[in-house]
Amino acid sequence: MGIPLRTEEEIIKLREACKLASDVLVMIEPYVKEGVTTGELDRICHDYMVNVQNVIPACLNYHGFPKATCISINEVVCHGIPSDDKKLKQGDIVNIDVTVIKDGYFGDNSKMYVVGETNIRSQKLVEAAQEALYVGLRTVKPGIRLNEIGKAVQKYTESQGFSVVREYCGHGVGTEFHCEPQVLHYYADDGGVILKPGMVFTIEPMINAGKKEVRIMGDGWTVKTKDRSHSAQYEHQIVVTENGCEVMTIRDEEIAEGRIQRMMVNI
Image 1 (cartoon, rainbow, N blue to C red):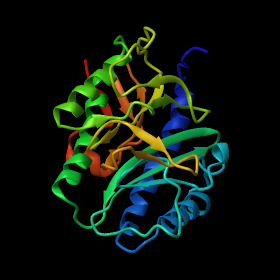
Image 2 (image 1 turned 180 degrees about the horizontal axis):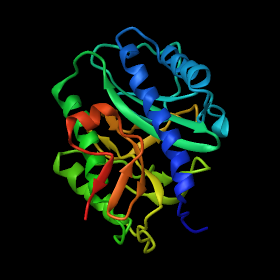
Image 3 (image 1 turned 90 degrees about the vertical axis):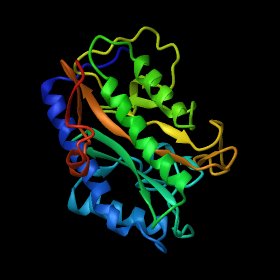
């Protein structure tokens, strides 16, 4: 299977799904506070997606995943299962990963939240995870090798004293949740893939405060750092353009900060 090049009509549909996915992350932010359970956060997101946005939560029942969102706290790297037994505590760092399906098209994104104030190391980790994503976004342009993204992300992450998880990567997305290409966040052989306008994929580096190794827990989903160090991740879905990329899941808060733009001109 080759890497799909999306038509303008498809990109319009994907843009709509991505806006809805990013809106969920904005909506849930005021609820992420000490004492709330991840199960309650998931229900709020689920109800908003289904009843307000009229979209399908893509995670729910995906290969048997039991909830509408993935919520990963502290040493959980990804795929944390929301639960009424997991209450947020002061200082927790939390990733919420939301994917919606609108008219058959997928929008996928995630971001970090900090409960109150956390320690300096964890705060730096969260900030570095966001910048690692932004470094990747600033790299994208047609004509370059796909692995230039991972090379840039890895170089930045390790310069900050953190490590890049190897087992999980960004991915193509469109009318399916996961498709080609696989977008590694470290430098490795990419089979010679050259970026072209119309390619749609996620960039979603997971970075650890300690070592890069991870382990899958007994539920078959939850991934934790082996050394129990904290982990952080941000994710955007993009389309490669003629001179860079369009960040389809960008939030207004990010535009206001000015570190990235919806239309990234990288040439």
